[in-house]
Image (cartoon, rainbow, N blue to C red; front, side, top):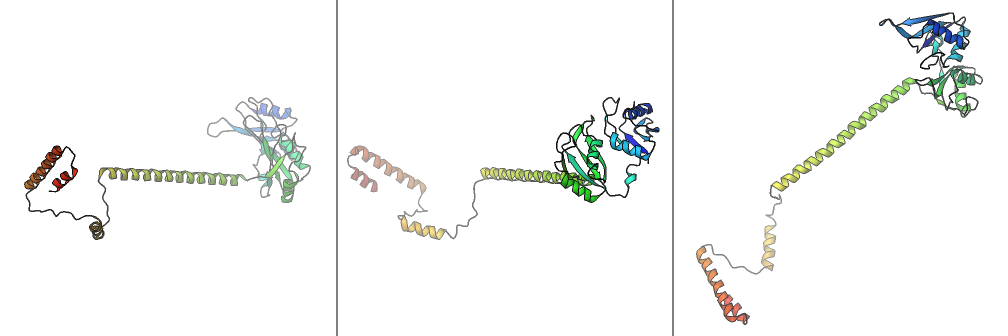
Length: 290
């Protein structure tokens, strides 16, 4: 296989531009096939590049991929892959590790060579870049042997020689697992949001019910549901024991006569008090009693 896929192309990048770009990095290409958009008819943003032999294509993929693309404006980098989109290694298991703390000078080729010297089953390396083509400071390395993958996790932690500082390695999380984790987090957040809304509604409902009860209490007189029929005999007995006997009210007496009698008694008391000038209190009391 001697054909590579090249992506992230701008509309001005024609066949001559791509050929000159490879020549600038010391690579010879046989042919370039630009792909057009079937719907719009314009450039599709990628092409296929043929090399003299499979080794030349593999060397270009490992050494040129990720390098700055000469003449690009705004600046871009070579974005290369096998033309079969992974069919070259179909059916072969791969084991990846995450590599962090990479300095800006570390490219795909530098990272791959650093691991290839120690682990022959290293199949490739990729430094992640941003939209401007600058390194994000981390990348991934692929292995074809599981034992070497495990050794790399144990032996390359804090290793020096790849850039200007020690690297940091860990197990790479597959994209599928990351998507599942993100979906789980989204569902969990939705559950928390719904539960918070439920609690808020319950609090509002409790406050509303309390206000309604308070309004009813202020509007209507208080009534008790306690039956006092059983308590009346006890209360009456206690009253009879402690209080003095009261005069029995005659229901047949005329109300006017009772009022007149009361007024006469009060007038008599007033005249006697004025006559005595408050000196003889016993007589007043006795008179009032009469």
